[in-house]
Image (cartoon, rainbow, N blue to C red; front, side, top):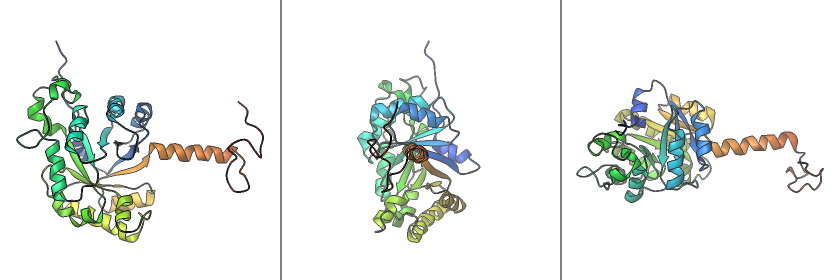
Length: 278
């Protein structure tokens, strides 16, 4: 007799149940091992990224499988708001999607339609073949599928900020997420995500979300900035990334043990110092 299973609770449900902002981190390495390591850290959620990271369907699947045994929500960001791609992500078992570069209510509606079966959307029906339904081991999956999915859309351009109230009003948009880096670039402030104009735009969107009764999150690696956004109403945050932590951690090791060259760098080939020993 097959095992009957129930879907995990969604990020939407986790946000609704939370009594504090939920803290998470990016998982960008493409490694299931690193994803599992991060899943056990005690954070509330992970963002498995496929927009700026070397992730395809197979590696995303492996990471979802690796983290599922831990008390953490796995949100997946596809590279683009594309109906076919979102169908594939859902079928392989991603329940929570963060859709990048949503600039209008029409684009938000397209994302919502992509995750819902007809007549309420355009998601292709292949659940019997898919991990999403656990190969039809989730009872009544087709009728319940919309309940098992959450949609967060990313506000990261001036156009999106201008349309944020309309985007928030779209039925099926469960939350918005602010991307200050791209937002700064769209404002002509490339690399200046801490600029007062960028922060003001983020806080405007946080206020709009509160008015609409929907959660809003933000990317903020700087602790002081993260706490300021929490005070301004952010319900969830990304406060670090696996690759950034590894990069800074290994650099700190090198700083401790490798003598610097006159130009401030460390010798990469052993020149100017003792040869490496292994």
